Image (cartoon, rainbow over all chains, first blue to last red):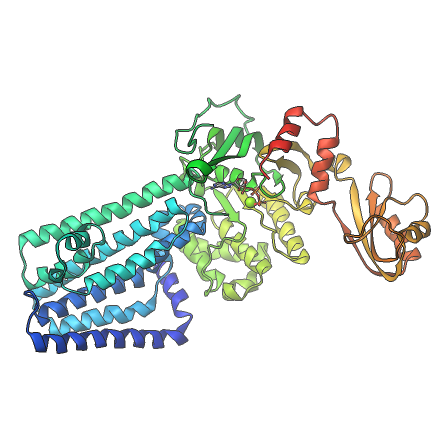
Length: 249
Length: 364
Ligand SMILES: Nc1ncnc2c1ncn2[C@@H]1O[C@H](COP(=O)(O)OP(=O)(O)OP(=O)(O)O)[C@@H](O)[C@H]1O
Ligand SMILES: [Mg+2]
């Protein structure tokens, strides 16, 4: 299945290299910006340039993994709204798994390579830090995937599937900055509503300044958003098979 | 109606009288209502209002009805994609909505224009992947794909990217996907829709062959009368969510599908009266083609002739047409479904008052 999805994606090779290049250039511009910025100001609310680089590595890797390996999660809403689910439901396989694995986006390999490269170059990789980095990246990926499934499952109720892309843009923007720059209610929202904190800042902090409290918080985030994703799809599917989702087909 | 029938738990009836031992589908008073809109604009649609039938192993059944008749809704309930609001449904002894996974291992489904194949890849690759999902082992799967390629006359299609196939070719590949796991029972929702005449014909032949050679039970929906004639042995005609006719096609042919329509493009414009005179007095009804008002005495360049096949052989009428008219173009068509349904309602014996009522009240 995985291999088939890859072959499907690679069939359009022409645009592939160009897109990937754009993506990497885009990432490099960000890095350049932060390097210059921190050289001027030194640190922002306790965040140093190193913290920022680790944040960016985790984020790039998590986004790359979700959008690359599970490319359809982002389009779950439209897939549900267009009735694509019917085909998946006719197979003896978990429909969410089928849809998620059906499509990969090799362009995101750019992000994945970038995330790994960044950590290798400026992340001071010791064995311990590397292990920690891998662990928090897996956690960030799970939170992001869960979040996208929740958004996609909204289509079971609304019958339209625009929430996924919107939410994705939002979470990427919010997780690209240190959590400490956000105050009060917004900061809470970034833990509870749009889990940007679990995808960027918290994993980075955990690598830079490991603490049981942070680890526990991240694990909680994974459980909460992973669970929310699983549950919302389950409930949505129930709604779908009970005919309450109007797909117009 | 309750505010939200879909949310409440459906009333499951006790299973009715035990169906015949070889029944693969047993449906008893299957119903489905939908509610749409919010608050004040809330509306309840009775898409399926009490359908009962059984299907024996090896049957070829066409589930025919006009748009909105409830065909897709019914087939979704039979395949477990939709839970009935009421009534009992058994397919291969399973309750589809609660045992969907188990059922999916034993039935094949093909839903209109939905695709399970990866568009950029040759169908063969997709089939191998889907086969793996079905848990088929690798050598067996390879043999099965070859076998299906031959059966569906699609061997050379399997190696071209699905995106580059015509709709008819793609549908045959989709059918291969539905048949990978050798299902006993095949459900198809409007499989011939959008296909050109030749592709339709080929697809129908494949279905018949599948049924006769592999005794696969075929259940298809359509709003094309020709699907009754060329695929099915039994026709169930539904309208506004109820079955209004259920009989073997052979008997249907004697009672309802008794007319054909010959459409003739004329090389020289003629009046309808002249055409009638040229063809002789015992010819069926002759009308101008297109939306011309009936017989205004002006010459027309296309006519349609109704033929009652119980009284006249189609060939004989065609013969006369070719001999006496300057023909530019000619085709023979089945009567439109609406005409057949109209016929069912006007035939006195078959029409229960309740059915007529539902026709009047039905959603349009
Ligand atoms: N999920 C849904 N929510 C609300 N109404 C629905 C839903 N699904 C179907 N309907 C309605 O139920 C009725 C029957 O629809 P169905 O799709 O079963 O018809 P059909 O016989 O398949 O028609 P067609 O030939 O157009 O495919 C229609 O009025 C349709 O609008
Ligand atoms: Mg339909």
